[in-house]
Length: 284
Ligand SMILES: CC(C)(COP(=O)(O)OP(=O)(O)OC[C@H]1O[C@@H](n2cnc3c(N)ncnc32)[C@H](O)[C@@H]1OP(=O)(O)O)[C@@H](O)C(=O)NCCC(=O)NCCS
Image (tube, rainbow, N blue to C red; front, side, top):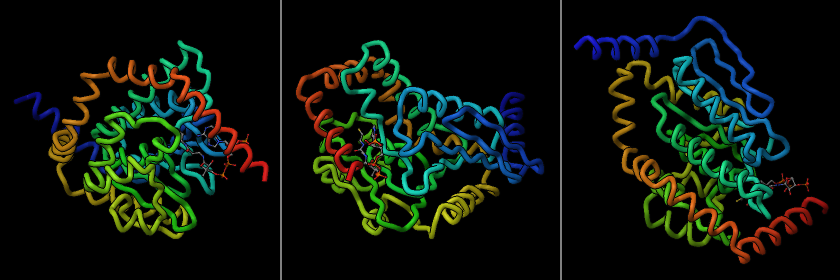
């Protein structure tokens, strides 16, 4: 009884808006700023495209832990780039990889997903630009998505690179859009325009730009002001429990499968061609 009371009290404290303005630099690749309402804005700032390398993932991991410890009311994931939310996994981490580093890279990504998808605090993504692959994954692991209008795209395009998205990527997608649309999107490597994403439910709202996206994410998080936080977080955990326990139980097997894929000559060839295509496009 006493421990239940303590839990409720702690959670009530979390729900109270904080009067202080707190801003903390998490590291060079991720900025964490907590606003006057107690909402943490976690900004990825590995420019130009926030491709997720080991160091960015490690900083994200730390930021997610810190947001939980600081009892923030909620977390908004954002990008410092004006046109890209995140370009997804850094291809250079997977191309001719160093065996130890690529293992750490993948287990760190698993950890980030478990913390983000399973966070007790409310989460929203302010998607102010392109969000392919891992960029899409981060956003669909949040509870709410607001995307800036523009010629941006979002989706899990792994198959286009010859990579098979792991189970937890798929689980994240089917937690947001219906299974049939998810299957077609995954097998075709579909990148959705902003309008298409809104229509299928991949994003929840559009915004005129980053500030508007952040403001709309805040409005989403503030919806929970009158909801008892303990009931909220348990409910979220239960809804997400199947996907979370799958990865918790299968981390080793998932790593093994990734390493097998990434080290296969055909995947290496696909990655090489894809990188060359990106470089060629950038040079134009
Ligand atoms: C995100 C994207 C739409 C942004 O387009 P853009 O603003 O025109 O930026 P560019 O394509 O010119 O990319 C800028 C630089 O980042 C690099 N880059 C882009 N995505 C990258 C990635 N996922 N990993 C590593 N490097 C990447 C580009 O090669 C380029 O490098 P350079 O400046 O040395 O030539 C585009 O970069 C893209 O489609 N990236 C690949 C996304 C993807 O398929 N990711 C899946 C990874 S599994």
